[in-house]
Length: 249
Ligand code: MF3
Ligand code: CO
Figure 1 (spheres, protein in one colour):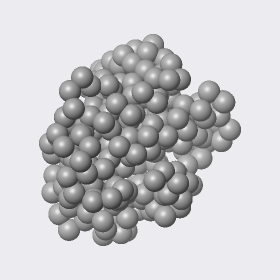
Figure 2: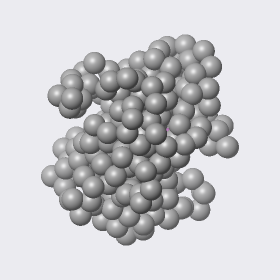
Figure 3: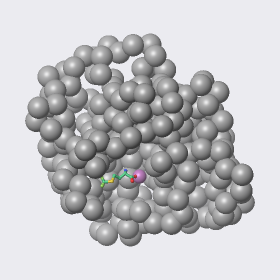
Figure 4: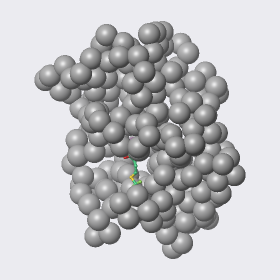
């Protein structure tokens, strides 16, 4: 899982740098799939429950699970959530980033940064002896402090030799504690945060999730390992850790 995560972190870093106005969301998927395979990994999303692509590419008001399409052209000012999963020697990693296309609005930039930070607020709680919902509560308290809507209908998950394992990991405040975190647990923590209401709806393709009020949405996800000390961020490059993480503990 360390190796799967290391590769996925690199794929996100490289893919994020390649995205430009004029590319279609299908171009993004093709490029991402090529990168994943070039590292000797299998894209885990492809054909998962019938999902037709390797990368979920979700633009602006699309929250997650956007289906890549040759006719959907990215434009300056768009924000794009890229969600990818890889399998390396039977073990999974899952991670997502939201990136801006060219220059984007201040509101969009803030939404992206705060969604990312909500994940790191969750990480401060991702230590052995704490409970699972300490992570959920930290994410939602931070995101809601800006008036954002924390999506309820989709959650993070355990991950390992399958993409989705127990437990479910909500991003919104819970009244219970949830299970106790123990070293060796591997989790995919993935806040999905809307600039407006938390409500989402499904498009006719039965995959693409959009905000009900059509406000912008951002997504940030990493595969993590619970240890005796601070969590290990398996799907984040050293650069990514330096940007958001090393100063947390
Ligand atoms: N990253 C998504 C998740 O965490 C997976 C996308 S589902 C797929 O659950 F079908 F598109 F693969
Ligand atoms: Co996931």
